[in-house]
Amino acid sequence: MDLLLGELLARVEASPDDAAVARLRSRHRDTLDLLTSPGQRQEIGRVLPFSEAAALGTTRRISRESHTSALWIDAAARLVADCARLVAGPGPLLLDVAALDRWDRPSVRVLYRAALVAADGSPGLLVRGFPGRPPTARNGVIGRLRSTFFDNLAARRGVVVHGPERDREVDGGEFPENGTPEIESVVHRALAGGLPDLLRLVGDSLAMQNFERSRLVSETARRLYGSGAVPAGEGPDLQVQLLRLEAISAAQVGDIAEAEQLLGQALELARRPEDVAHLNYLLALIATKRSYDPEAARTYYGRARRAVDDLADPSVEALVERAWVGNGLALVAVLEARRATDPDEREARFAEAYREELAAFAAVRGLPGMSAFYLRYNLGYNLSFLLEITGRYEQAQSFLTSVSSVLLSADRSDYLALYQYAIGLLRLRNQDFPGAAESLGLAVGLAESLRDPFYLERMLSALGYVEHKRGRHAEALAVFREGTRLARWLRDEDAYRQQLSGLLWSGVLGADPLDAETLAAAEVHFPAAVHDLASGDRARSIAALHSAGAEILVPSSKLPSYVASVDLEGRPGHDLNRFLAGVATTERPGTEGAIR
Image (cartoon, rainbow, N blue to C red; front, side):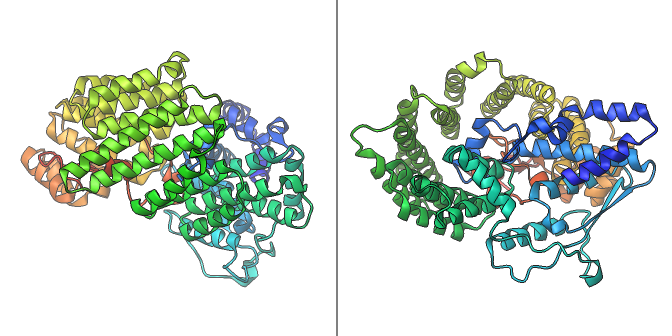
């Protein structure tokens, strides 16, 4: 990425249009400072402004938390795209990239996204990537990661894969499986600050979904320990923690068998009860969220609980681990309740979930430290979600407001936006449509002030849905129109189709005829319906939308923590939150309530 920015910025500075250069620098001031200022570097690599809570979300669980990294990748991509437009003028800029397969994963994401956002009616940036020397095998960890990632990239819109041309290959060597002298130097410098610095280095790479760097650093550190290059006192804890992070990395890219194997290796080395509990907790999460096996999850949670339950004087860390186990068991109980056919069994499992969540919340309520704070934050939302699942919407609102009081008083816009969204959805579930519209309107305004287009697009979709449910079709039309514009700006085709469906239904059900721009979009996404939509006949238009499969997205109770259109890792095959809440994915007016 540094190489590309260096080349582009040099050409930008050479532009005779001083005013355009000044505008570009002003528009991208924060991103330029992050990506080019020496002050933003550390000896162990460039530091991105991830909060400790965001890092904990990535390094404590197996969920892919890419929202924060997506904001920075998108910002960097728009900088590259604007540079390309300025340098190329009216024609597209062609970038030839040697040894593209040796670029790190975030930089490839930036490059792909830059080509997407630079296209505004016509291509503004074309990228030709040439491979380095083909790897001789794909069975190494790094080789598998690279192969899977580039296979995913090849399936993306705008990507064309040509057959191998030996004379165009670049002798860049293979992406190393065992690290490099540079990686060894980075690991040594990190270890000079102690094990926490090394774990932060690996954790930050995970937070950016830079899985190859995370594995290279981790495996290099373990190799150095094996050769005696790491102080012996750090050894056992280092091995356990690095194996744990490698397992999380494997789980995030879908390699569940490897994740379980790495956690098993870590358990063989673990000496501290807190580590034994946490490793079993991770195995239980995999059983719950990837294998959907509640029985196996209960076995692992039982082992985790036994590891810390008998401690005479448990540490804060042990108390936190115990609470995480309770939180996990509550999720298992809710899953079992949702699958139960016997009403008594269903109620028993919901009662168990309440007991576990409340006990966990009570256990960490007064504990110090960021880890306990992060868990309290999660438990507050999880308890509110549990109240929602069981139909206690007003209690859920009251509880969420109560447990959020400290953060609400801090006037944090990022937290307030998520809070207002959650309250809006609870009011929606309770059929309080005016209240839901009020809360979601506040959430939209906060997301706009935060310049967070990904959450803003989801919030606009939710607000449009609420206005539709209220029968305020003109208001829904205006919201969905804004949503389609934002989704197009984000180059998110799935979101655009969803917003467009809402726009079409709002126009048909309301009094306003569909304009030419909307009909042109419908011709692309719902071509079979265009003729009837253009007729202005309400009954024909409704029938055409039904026939074309145009459906309005029902908002989820929780905003997604990943941005699939940016991180290029695909979407989960199962929406667990919707399943637990019993909420439909989409609705067709006149057939609301059917889960699709």
